[in-house]
Structures are given as structure tokens and as C-alpha cells.
Image (cartoon, rainbow, N blue to C red; front, side, top):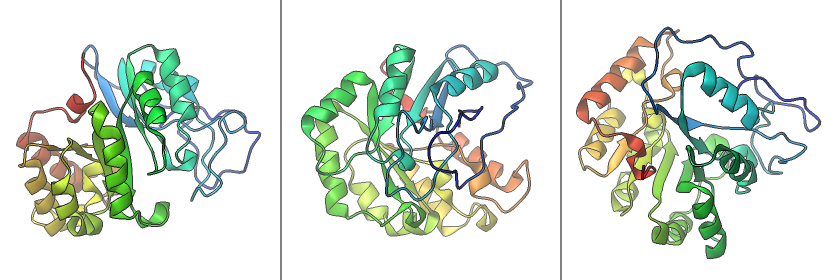
Length: 256
């Protein structure tokens, strides 16, 4: 998430702001390191938030993101369209235009999106579409609608990003296995780290990785644990997945 909230002229936030004073890491990242998951928000007076959003963030625009990546040492990245902006991907399109090929985008779309709009997003640098199968972000989508979106992006070779919890993961296994495109599952599948490596959802996640067409982002350790930092139970699960495969989840995105 980008730091340094932008001056707000829009609706009041309903969640905490980004860290206003991030610290520089003790390690130096390798050249061309890629941050594969982050959001930008607003600014709301330029890129309004969706009327049906489930939360309102503090503004955290592209300029703050660039400063944060400079501090951390990332030279590339993948913008993930935030649910608070809905299917209006304008903020990410604007950021991609400024960053001139070093970044990519993952969009939110609905079944009624015009093919011409998908082609425009592809030309702008988008390489995937994200599906939210999490109740806290709104009504669960119909599988027929998700399949319609997949047909829209198939000609462009996009990957399918799936955001879901462990419970929904178990309920969606057949659907995920049916996806022909490469699949990227966010945030370690949001399994319950307290269940450990033998938990049903984590074992199912490893089974999906073993198919060779499903990748898992080792992000969001704070979202799957009840422990305090450094989230040892969640990190242990991430290590298991890292040992399972050495393939980068963004190989579906990057052609350079």
C-alpha cells in the first residue's frame, strides 16, 4: 500500500491510514525486484471511489507509491485494482502511463465490460483480472459471471487472480481447477495459520500449486494469523509454499 495520505477533499475514511513513516529495510533488494501486490487509492477528488464500496480508504495516490518503492528498493510492480474503486480502473491506467513499462496492472471487470475496453486495458499494461470471493467486499459473484469475464480476457492471455478465504477456497476448488488460464491466489489463500500445515485449506492450496498452473502470493501474513509480529505461524506456511515451487507468481504478467 502506498504511504503518505493525500490531502482529502472527498468522503471520510472508514479504515486506518498507511504508515506515515515507513523505515528503510536492512537488506538491499536485487535489481529489478518486483512488488507483486499493492493498491493505490484516489485521490478521491480526481478518481472517485465507487458508490457501492464496502470501505473508504485514505487517499494514497501513485506519487506516494513511487516514493515508498524508492525507499524499499522495488523497481517493478503490479498494481492491483482496489475494490473501493470498483470496475473503474482509471487510477491504475493513469499510474501505468507515468511509469512507462516498469509496472503492470490487474483489473476488476464485470461481464458487461466491452471487449474494446479490455483491449484498451491490455494496451495500457494490464495483464490479469481479479475475482473477489470474499463476503466482506460485497455479494459473492455468480460463477457464470466470472466465466463471462474470463472469456473477455482470454484473447489477451491474462492470468486470473483469485482473492478468497480458506473456507471459500475449499468450496471453490472445482471452479479453480476448471480455469484454463494461469491462476494466482492472493495472500496465501487467507487460510487460518493456526490450523498449521495440516489444515484442510492449506493442504488444498498445496494441491492446487502441485497442478503446475496455480501460483500463490506469499503476501498478507498478517491476514492469516492471530499472532503478533513477526507472525511466525504464517511465515512457516509461506516457507512451505516457497519450497514447493521456485516459479514466480508474476510469470503470467511479465514478458520482459
